[in-house]
Image 1: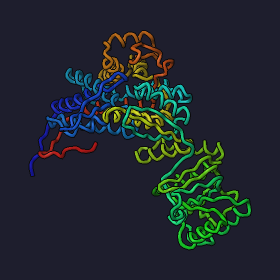
Image 2: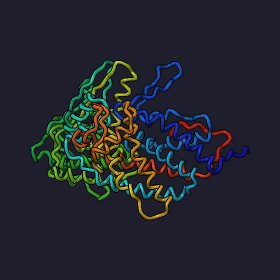
Image 3: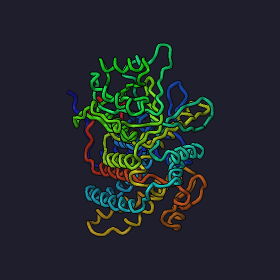
Image 4: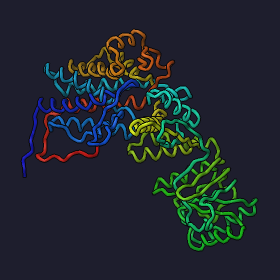
Length: 533
């Protein structure tokens, strides 16, 4: 077995910094609305223009210098995690981490203890996070939504369209994107909410007839159980007939056997227009969706977990909607008769679960459920004259759509790095601890200026002049790169998600602290090239 190569002490820290610096420099170029793109060469294909920190990081699978490559991979993983969890904040992480490492290495060269520096950085982080939370305001009005769209995309036309969408639907609205080959931007609103699903049997569709069934003013039976026997359905069908008839949509895990035959026979004879469908979701995702549908339509949810029996259903336990449509691959409900306080209570529950969820799959599921409970769908139609430009606009739109729910959790703060700059006052005069711990706090203090510095630099400005003017104007002010003016960010409606802002700082401090306190790098003789973050 070949022996590994080991890099020790300060040499290891220097190699890590080289790698982090390289990737951070690439990513910082995309910070701010006047930022550039990174061109990625693809052999004989047209170069890919990248504006997303996560995508830039993902395109780098290995660099020369294997010690430095470890630093690249360390930052690469963090940027991709930010993208997966929040859809934004990677460029800010890179700017902050680079600034922390630059200052940290200067102190190490002067003989500082890396562990004490780390302790001070962690103290500084706690102070900065507390200050950020003081700055945050709830995301509770339409102007804040428009401000987030403008800040996140840097594209006034796209930002205006996304702002209008979320003003209409609320921050939890559902948005799908359609791509067009020519330069084009339009958005439309559709009624209803859809889930992946289908008929329990294709026999509900008449040969040669339409591929979907529309039920007007239907009642809904919602259950997570399998229905196989006629005895399970006959009481429900009789209840519907006795209370005015009308169509019935049954949402269940499955309807089969004699029970399915009963439904098809009654429908064919025109006795009762009952249709059975199932959601194409797995496990707890299907369970959660059925519970949400029950609340949205004011139906009782018959669940096997409680031992509920479908055959005991009363007419008052059936949900109602203005319209239901079932087609191959989709179940849509329009105008559910859910009780608004119950729907809002459900949304509060889901937001609370989202606040503590760590698994990306679970977070996406919760965000998806919140958007459906909002009750509307928007379609964003966008195009561009080239594949590259279209891909950039689509990526910006998708980033913002994923980013909006994060602002619900902790509110919004002044954008463009202004929130970080305002936090410096809380760290300016550290007390207690050792001298090296105080140096660690000041490292965080100084790094907080990095995002606004790079936004100004990418806009072609001289950062010290911009910083001096922002500080002179006071907290809440920042640099608007589009107007090239120092403005009150609240009044200009240039805002960032407080959660993204906080997590970007926490991630950057974690990376820098790890890199500053690493004493050895162990390299395999035949490294495996990274293809996933």
